[in-house]
Image (tube, rainbow, N blue to C red; front, side, top):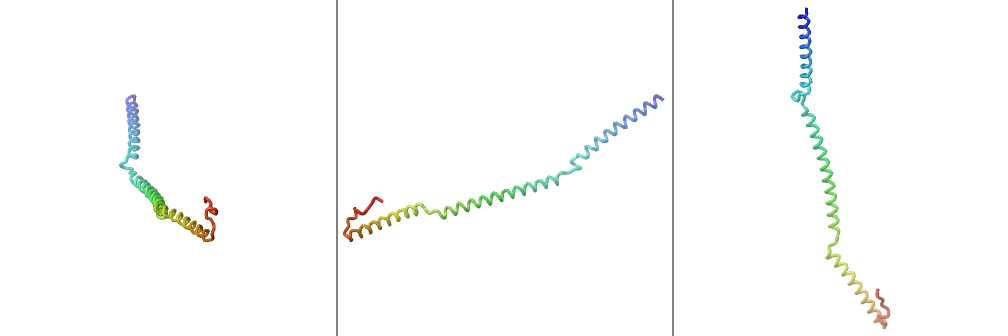
Length: 120
């Protein structure tokens, strides 16, 4: 009877050990990459990342194009240095010609131009 009880106890312990091993093995199999492939989720995440990168690059490109267009517009509408100097020279020349005409008119009228001219 003792022997039979010891055999039953040993059989029970073996069953428990086998059950524990089986549960561990089932958990490993469930988490095994061979059975569960995350390739699809990784591919979708990669596509999302590429889309975000494309959108960001398009924003950067449009911003760059706007800045470039603004610079080109400013350069096209800015007169050259030679033109600026020429305009100033022509303006001064016109003032001198007007002054000479005014002096000529004063002399024709018989007046002294030095009495009627100011520093301005």
